[in-house]
Length: 553
Image (cartoon, rainbow, N blue to C red; front, top):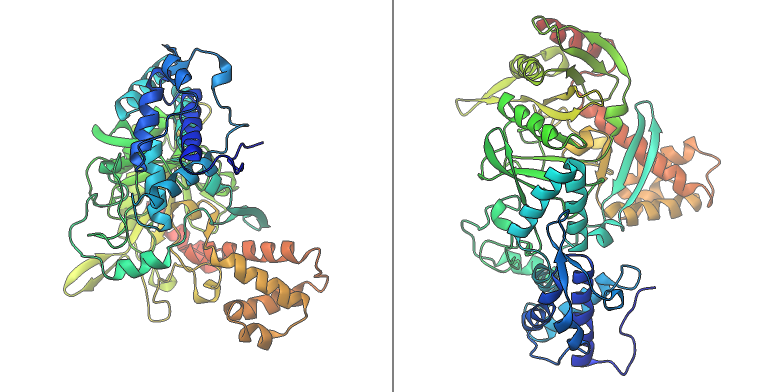
């Protein structure tokens, strides 16, 4: 059971000292802090929250701990009496860090907002974990001694222990799977990212504008950055003192490897260029994807498309996302095989998937990359007006391209390489101003945002508003309300037609099964969303159009 400071006898400065001491013990027990640094860390945390005392109750322990350097981890590990360390079962990290941050707010160390408290908490965690050079050295030693999987296991655990990967927040997400004609789709209502505080929203409106530092949240300059509030120059930016980035080489360039703080799947990681430059999808970056899976063959890695609408949320910084997860797209059946002339060593397949996905597999990476680059080159210039696919238009006298791909790479058990190429087109029309191959308006009550890399592969990231809205839908359906009643309720107005259809299709709906029926309905909507994003539909016209493109290869 978690230990909390609930005793009225331990209050004020004494309670703060107890919390800081427990946090330091936690850090040492998890190998983040060398035991002989315990007293230094205690005082550093005190200072960071605007306090000057009192002494830790176990100060003699803090001064007498010993340590040894582990040859397998490269970081100090405890070698003293086990009774002085704090285990996960005994320690409430979230509660402790929240109380320490509250003390910092009370002492005027930051603004009294959720983001202010988070900046203090992150600053504190940054003090009790290894410096970047230590992490880099330990990762390299672990990689060399025990391999890539052991190195990422160690690094991921460090990021969780240091509260960079927000495991407590991620646990709030709501997730389920739904059987569809495309297989089991994965649905997540994302509740982990903090909501914007009203004070922060107001401050943002009065914030000065200019050239921000760091330029974006993916820049490597974020490592150790203190963050800023919404009212600061250049607007809000999260604190990153507990961020650690492992340097890697992709395509002969300096890139960074880190984990996502609000992970959407197991060991969700990010690789980002050291240079702040635009996303681009081409042979060069697909080669970097293959470099990544050469470094970490137990992970997949992919790139968002490099155009608006079909791309991800951050197109300003060249980056990839990867991790240890098998997505529904990767389990999709093979609909047909085809040949790419001149690339005899490449197995080419069309997947039975709502988006138009080609899977290329080869033993040799260069042959595979040449074939993938050929597909991309042909697709970039390919138009099929009958199906609404337009490769290029002219705006203000300048050509604007609309076709690109979402590429995903992985290594197979036999050592061969696979590239999934999802064909994308971001053309928009008066009928579909947000994009012809974007979720259509009838599904916006569930999903309106871009369909990026993660969702291309079959994992929906849905907005938190749905928790309250779908709860209200459930109550209306159980009450037997009609469409008019659903439309009259602001929480359910956008869902009214869909909810009425759901009720009509399920006369067996009851208090026991309503939640399950609604969740299945949401999953079916996500299937339709993916179908909208597919450039070649699964009808006769769509299949004929795909075959025209494949013939052009």
